[in-house]
Image (cartoon, rainbow, N blue to C red; front, side):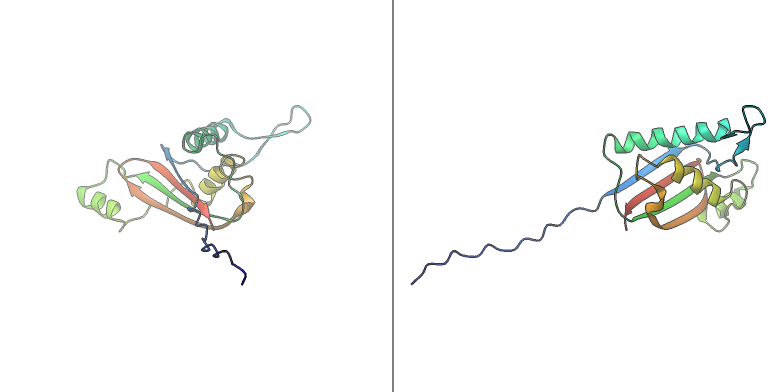
Length: 154
């Protein structure tokens, strides 16, 4: 009679979901349109406000991610832009804004804000923003302006 080794129990490797939450303090800014210069052969350039805003987003992301490599695969992004409630608003209107009954509809546009953040995070959080297959974007009123991005594998 042949002795059989007991079979090992099968263990499924459960990998914790990789998720980053990046908080960018300050007023959100939309991606500026490309500018064109007549000098130097008609070159295209990005305005300095957009360059500075992208640098700030990158800096905040690097603080969270550290030296981790960019995420691979399909990604889901949730982005909430918190807009400061105007100080001139009455207590009632302020309360309505903070409860979500009123929503900000002013500049910057939500799609331009997302574009700035997504472009800034290329090579840091993900290799290319083409990896984003699903995005949930929203603007809300809050006491302090900030943008919160949560990125996870889709």
